[in-house]
Image 1 (cartoon, rainbow, N blue to C red):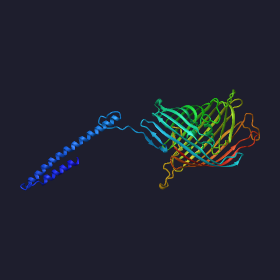
Image 2: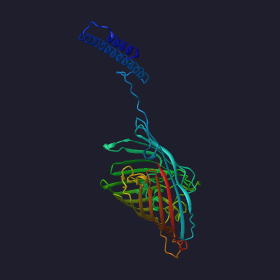
Image 3: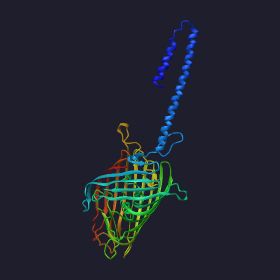
Amino acid sequence: MNATTRTAILAALLTGASTPALAQTTEERIAALEARITALTGELAELKAETTRAAAQKTGQNGGQNGGQNGGQNGGGETRRAPEAMVSLPNGRPTLTTPDGSKFAIRSMIQFDAAAYDERAGTTDLNSGTNFRRARIGLEGTFQKHWNYSLITEFGGSGTESPVLNQAFLEYAGWRPASLKNPIRLRIGGWAPSAGLEDAISNAEASFMERPAVAEMVRNLAGGDARSGVGVLANGDRWFGSLVLTGGTVGTSTPEFDEQGGYIARVAFTPLAGEDWAVHAGASLQGIFKVADTGPGAVTVTELRFRERPELRVDGTRLVDTGAIRAKDMTVYGGELGVSYRNLHVSGEVFRIDVDRIGGFNPRFGGWYVQGAWTLTGEHHEWSGQTGSFRGVKPKAAFSPADGQWGALEIAARYSVLDLNSGEGARGTATPILGIRGGEQSVATVALNWHPNALYRFQLQYLHIDVDRLSPTGVQVGDEANVVALRSQVSF
């Protein structure tokens, strides 16, 4: 109702109320006013109906115009807005999700290490200092629900590396044979195939700064970061399986003139599990059926070399090393056990490495480790079928002194052995013919880990390194050292 209409109605009321009618009785004046009010009420009702019709007509016109611009008119004149993409930050990871199920996410991990070495025995001078162990950035995503991709670049390492490709693959995850709950994933490209329990755990979630020496060495034989391959991965809620055919790696320090050919197979499951506990069992088998040619000449030279650092990368020195071994192929057998019960986590693995040597006896190497972790703040290491391994600690509440929250605190301990001796002979004697004195390394580690929130982590470790190794003449040339190390990490 506009201002003119309201003015007219008010004037009519005042006019009807002030008309001189001295001759009329009180009852007649009341009757006249009631009749006038009734008439005005009818006029108001008509004006209201007219206004409603005009508004509805205008809304219908706007709806038709908007509908035409969006590809057609809606029957009722209503406008339907197209679904919009959503931006989120799960655990600090920038992620764009579209209505059709596609995703695009930015990934990054930065680990800055500092260490002080105290050599107790031996001739090796280990370098105290700092190192960006990992400095990764990249992207991953899903296109049209079933196609996954990943591209990650590495800028860190052991202090001397140049930027290299860490991971780049395409994956189809839309095949569900035999009514499987989760799709089978078909992957091709370059990535780190799962070669064991500790290898399957993310670097950002492991309880220690580095994997056990034997697990780290084994993962890089037929696998490792940026290992080219084609594979099949499958899992359920309580099982995992993978089979990958592998080739060479990007940025390898050893030239390959005829690329290596290998394979990695792994199975893992939880035979017993509950709401806050799980028992893990698994096995792995990997091999190199085609050893790379390491020389460009007409003569084919196929060699394998086994060596590893003492579970820290601030100093990149390898204290155990077999040297080059002429070989036709190699096989690695692995077994894994673990249990997670509330805030307690215990696991271990054992590996055996058989080398098919060219000439002479076939050497055998191996190693094992056992480790445990106790979360003081009560967090639980969950088992994941996606990777066939335990997940890392996620704090129940982020660090906030004002609210009495301190994040997650965890203590951990580990003992590992890597034996690269084979037919080494006795101390004080020369190396037997075709014997290998690669050395035996043991590392004892204790750690304190603090997770203030889901993005940041700080790790403080003490390591005792003991290497028993004989020279070609039988003299002890091993090493013994104590190390204190600290890692600062951000990962999303």
